[in-house]
Amino acid sequence: MTKPVLELRVAITTQEYDRLVEIYQQGLGLEPAELWTDDTGSAVLFELGRGTLEIFDERHAAKVDAIEAGERVSGPVRFALEVPDLQAALTRLLAVGAVQVHEPIITPWRHHNVRLRFPDGMQVTLFQVLP
Image (cartoon, rainbow, N blue to C red):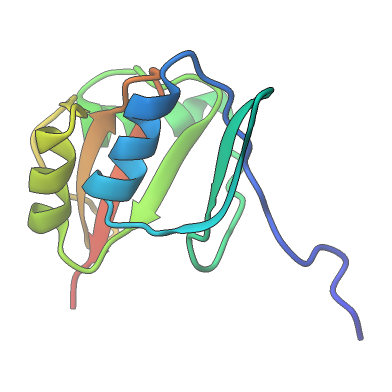
């Protein structure tokens, strides 16, 4: 049986293209899977592994923000990226311009999380699943 959705792609349009590419490439260590550059503009595609979609109501979003950031700070979209080494990823991302929103925490669901803000304003949670 064919699945009804085969891939999730999130497309971000930004005034900070070069900085944002640096965040994902240098900060997260991703290599471009595809590049589209010509006289009309530039785009890059990064493959991020398995994609999932979470839909929260406002109360649940407020609870998660309170745990990860101390208050309701994220907008209607927030990325959550599982990384193998939270501290290493955090160090790389801070070095290329991400801003730490809150200190790393251990969540009630046993993830080591840290909330960041990328140059385009996107709220991003890095998480490492604890044993």
